[in-house]
Length: 211
Image (tube, rainbow, N blue to C red):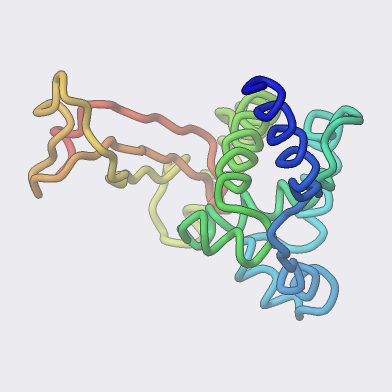
């Protein structure tokens, strides 16, 4: 009798349960759509640090690697390669938090984080050696001439500078990452030609050699 009553209660509670539906927090990407379609060229360039022509070319170069495979289980609309590249460039250009970038592009901050790392890795793997490379003899000669025209100094091929990139130093070897201002960082050293285009990048994990 006890088991019978228990079973009846179980059936009643099961039937009274609310049927679950697929739900997602409503978000809008109106700000991104406006930037893409309506913003003046100057505003677009300020947001993404490149022109629309360069942006579209970058999307074209990366879209095959960033395109999603069909997923018949997920009900979420996949983030397009165009939006993946855009939110990555916006993050790099503004140093905004993932949450802020997500508000602009209508996605959750975890989605921003995932696609940001995905796009950066894709660019490094596919484009870095193709775009950032040391000049050949002809380019060196041309850069030397242009630098001399700009500043009057002979035999200059490139300009070099460095910058501290703040990091959270690891527990092991922590002191190796602390700079003279007493915060953790690594050094990014950049070399550019007369057009301010990078021709070489170097990242050092021990930044004590830079002031």
